[in-house]
Image (cartoon, rainbow, N blue to C red; front, side, top):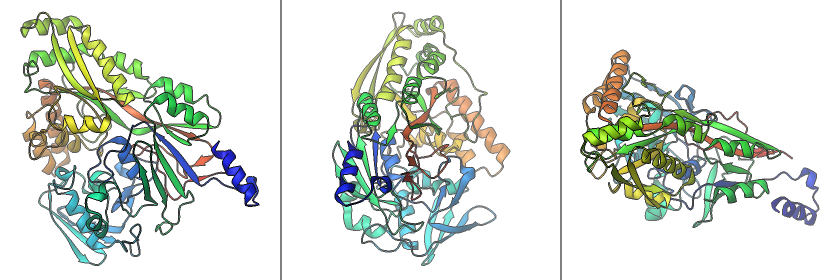
Length: 513
């Protein structure tokens, strides 16, 4: 229907449909609605992907890649650091325009962005910036960051991801609370409209410093039903589709003519976090039983070997600092039952979880539920909308939390956010420590400031060993990112990965005639 309407429009304007390139991109996202569209508050996969097309960082990872080895200039043209790694100076591009009426992006905006990202009142990622002692403008286009201690990767904090998204000061101050629904950045696409539970519309930033985008508008449509989303893609109503994270989806979508399918890095690691303050999970024998009850091999088969990697440690494989030299809990229902009996639960236990209705994650938790049942562990699932899920688990309301996440690929980020006691949910410094784990604080914090790389790796290894020995959480698998698009869409880059979990839609993207 969409392309036939385009043809009618061309005829009415006296144009040849053979020469009329499509300029509207329709995206199908597997979510019921937007969460928060403020980049310093957005934590969900659907929101991060959308915001990725609107914002820049001081630096960025080359589009189509996910590894920090591909970091390159973005709003900063160049940077230098002191020998001790504590002082960093960034020289900004001149002439970069904020969206709309908000003028040029300069050092004042960069300072404001970093300070805002580092404040727990305005950022979900404040803890990431704990080592930032000061940020100052040392010129109209120069910014100096002074650290109180070395960090494993300062540049990783400044890519357009989480707190690294650069905002425009005048826009944030002018819009106030409305900024969460009217985001203003400097990227290739600008926010234009939001219709709840329907779509967010973006339009091309014609003043983008890398050049005007060839795509002129994007409709980011919320279609939570996998079947409805697939049908919309097959009929041509949407051009770019977020895939259900399992093998059957890939096998089915590949059969649609003129379709490109990509399996992207990084993997989001699914982890079952066990709240060690809530009985019966305060008993380590029960937590060990849960670990032995989950069949990881079956879970990988269920999701599909092409899209899934089994996880053994609480740090994802491929991250700097990952180790597989940890205590393992092979699937053993008999041992799980024996551990429960030893803990005083010969008839099994019941655990409760609040869980997202997002289909890919829910199917995983339902599979976990089935494997636990074999060992006498009854898991009761209360399903809520995805944004509500994020809100409730951060209020420490769930005994068991299934969390799926990808982070900047350095062990420090994952360990700090999920296993440092300062990150325990419900506390003033909360991040995403749902298990109330505190057994590896010394190693996590020492590694963060250790300048000797060999000693740093050893500390990260010990931290993972302690967390797995205690069974603060049970890692399940890494799910790679699945997307597909109509082959008439050319993204302009070779897509191997994206830290923001969505394909890079930049000024280079276009539709072939």
